[in-house]
Length: 365
Image (cartoon, rainbow, N blue to C red):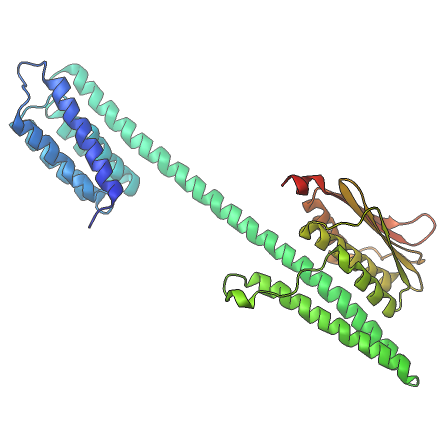
């Protein structure tokens, strides 16, 4: 079929409205009695609307010709009905301003052909103006909606890129730093095979973890393009993986202790991932900048929040400008959950990172 069900419904509705107008407005007028020919012509005038979606200008032209014919054969003093409104509206929605102006002028001319009073001659131009103005207003609104949708899509893409950048930075910075330290430790202890072997084992393990986490991230990005069986089999790290993170930090040469306070319970995946990434980035920065030091990771479970605190007792803080994406990424992660983050030197020496993440909002969702 060259038309859709909606086209048929619109055509039928406009035809019924025109027929009702023909009966109720013309019947009381002794000069314009209701006739079978009038019914047929009014019905025939609506049929071109079936093609209005694909050929709006041709549909309006056909409606105007049939309307003018009906006016000459069966006088219709008030015939600016729903059919003409729909036909002119379709042209104004689909065509340029110049074409719309010409179509409006032609519609007005045909409409005035059968007008019999000064009041009708005023109503026709006003109706034409209202129909064209409404179509132009809707066109403008839809353009604004499309532009806003594009802006939202671009913003979503930018936010996703920032998230990917944070994930890649956390993975690469942590594991590459560990691998670098382990490689240096193995080289410095070649005379002690056992120590060098332990360093190389840690280096290999860190490299495997880095590859696995990067593969998981890429699998998430490709989600929907591959078969369900290709989905990542390993979950994203969370608060339960802090033990492994602390152990890696110890092997990398930074003595680190882990403390858990409160009742340990499962966290929402996004919150758990944020806790893990903050601890990971903070320990990475400590290994880079704190020098000979000890580190502490404290995880506190509250009723409606969870707090992760990473401190070290090193004598050197990160030099200005070297925080890079690390601290910025931590702040963005915490801000996404409506939490707070403080990071800076401690009064007695060393550096502290404290993040407080609310849980009540996540629970409410």
